[in-house]
Length: 163
Image (cartoon, rainbow, N blue to C red; front, side, top):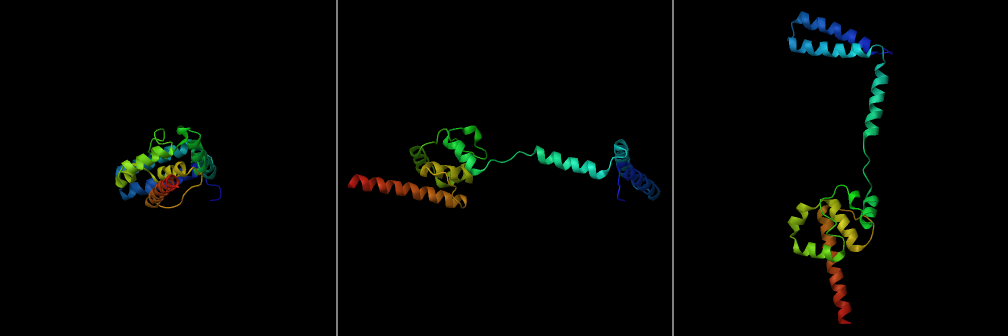
């Protein structure tokens, strides 16, 4: 069986069909086998390995590549919002630190967690800190990091105003 062709598979299926008929298997199953036999007769003497190898290559080439986090952050900082994949928030309205602070303060935590993906929160954190490095953690941990950064900014402002 080193050279398995579709014609040989069709021949084996014809033998299976005769076995099904002698065992009086339901006609529905016999018709399914007949359809497969007709399909394989159409391929003829093509090797099965060749046909399946081509199908695997085609599947890989059709697959789109997911952009990396650094690519997404770059497009965010360049204000190219069409490059943002996997986000739910509208970054056209949330592109400055002040807008992010008012959004986080005005919106309840549960609503933010429901509206935003983890990627959204990571991007908000990047805009808030003005760094392009990805923060690791769960959605809740990233949200808490955003809240910490906002508190830190407020304390820093109060310290500067007092001095």
